[in-house]
Length: 265
Ligand code: ADP
Ligand code: MG
Image 1 (tube, rainbow, N blue to C red):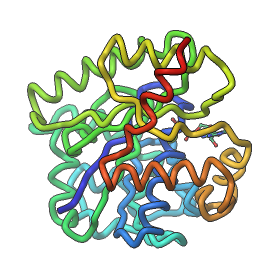
Image 2 (cartoon, rainbow, N blue to C red; image 1 turned 45 degrees about the horizontal axis):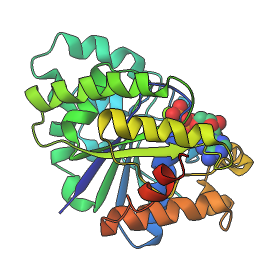
Image 3 (cartoon, protein in one colour; image 1 turned 180 degrees about the vertical axis):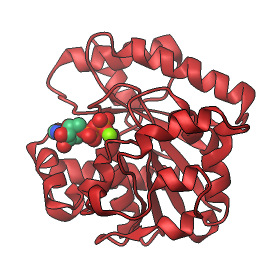
């Protein structure tokens, strides 16, 4: 059965795109057939996987508006993954979808034809709670929330959970929240742990693990057109994503929770 996971947080710079590329690469290393979907008009995922968004003939814009089938837009990446790319055209997609009936279901409908060809589909959301993100949450079985642990991070999580509650009520009753993934994580600070403990208390969300450590190699990978798993193979951050991917497959990705929360004092 195909597993569709949305990676969402309306805050920019929390490592959504990095998480999509890295979990995808890790699952592909494990032999899975992986499809990545770029739903951000800034097309960072598309670019970071070695594609030039400026020169693409088709993108998710055409797919979401029903002009072409998803299979016409897919591209192969160097790391054995398949990509449904974004271009700047996607910035206009929301406005065009707004006037359509069933606009929340455009992605789910588009993926129906090809979903069976993949073991896992990862949806890279844009930094907003607009129609594109609602489409992702409507098409997904599960949602994973990357979070940079800083003061007031919880406020964004609260807003996202409100949106998820709406989606559950109206378009996707079975959507499961996998939990919060600490990214850009600095284990040396008590503050990061306190933020996670607060989010766990406040919303009862699972904290996924291992937390992804901050590493300069992540900032370098996109320019090379490959994920950090391919370009920085053995670094700690790459290994953390491999362990996370394994945990998502086994259902043990929350194992780090007691360790993180317990360290509060
Ligand atoms: P988002 O998609 O949520 O906007 P990105 O994945 O684009 O976030 O990441 C934002 C920036 O942080 C990028 O420059 C990326 O390379 C960098 N980054 C992501 N994860 C890490 C990490 N673990 N350590 C250091 N830099 C990171
Ligand atoms: Mg992004």
